[in-house]
Length: 391
Image 1 (cartoon, rainbow, N blue to C red):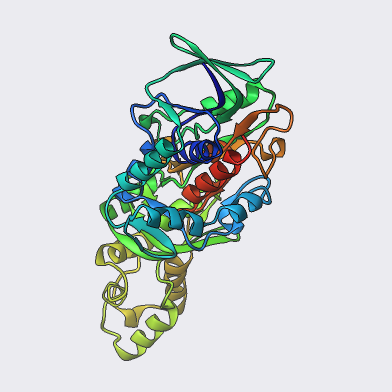
Image 2 (cartoon, rainbow, N blue to C red):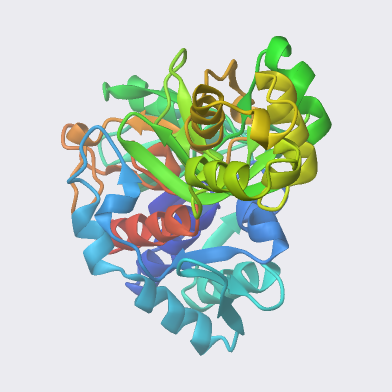
């Protein structure tokens, strides 16, 4: 059972790598323990797959080595993947901020990739457990249950441990360590925050309420939707910020970016002094949220009876509410994994390990993590393409 290339992991990066290697005439075997390929593709974007982002730049990625992603992203751009989607006549649309989704179903992207694999002569074996991986004189041997397959090149595209219910593990990191490569400690990213019970007693009734907010940690901020949940905070802005947050650090919430509360309150005090504070704020924020803020900060009574100090405190509560998350929901709900195989050990052009010829790491298993909004899929396509040209 001799191949030119064995790829372990039939997700977005593995499929793309298999297609490109197969198109070059390589004998390719794609292995996965799952029952179907592209499971993360299937569930992404609410079942419609946010397959890329037209505004992709290296600035949309986090890594200990921020320059590593530049080469691959330049060589395989969103326009290249869009051309593939259009070739297969898959209708799509831009939702917001450059995010592209299928009009129909994410299954169309999976079918497209499988069609390309078939055309490129790629062999696919699913429900296949990997027992061991070893180096041979001519390449690598992969021991499966029942037999052993060998190849000159071995590509690890197994992703990280995010969403373990889909079978995700840190197995790719184990292989990297087996061959002497360093691994940047992984952690959950693009993940909701949890809050301490003391704060949740106030906020739990807000579960399901969303606001447009600016959320900040240190010098990093994002403005998108923020959602209150029964465990804490979620929504696009929070998921984005989670990749930059460290345990114990405070975050700041601006619940009303479009309007400054302080002059609003002072004007109301002069013009409508008999109005309740909550009534004024409820014109601009959800009523339940206003009631909670007033209860937490004891902002009660009529605006005419409100002093400047109280107004300033309330304004700060709305525009710079400081919260220390208790943690995150972890890998269970994380969309991706931060950290991974240290890119210092890989070629940025080919993704080959510099000390282990023939061994490649691509996709999420590598220490490159994108922002929310199609950037991680674009990284999968770009890294898979780059390795597929080299294996």
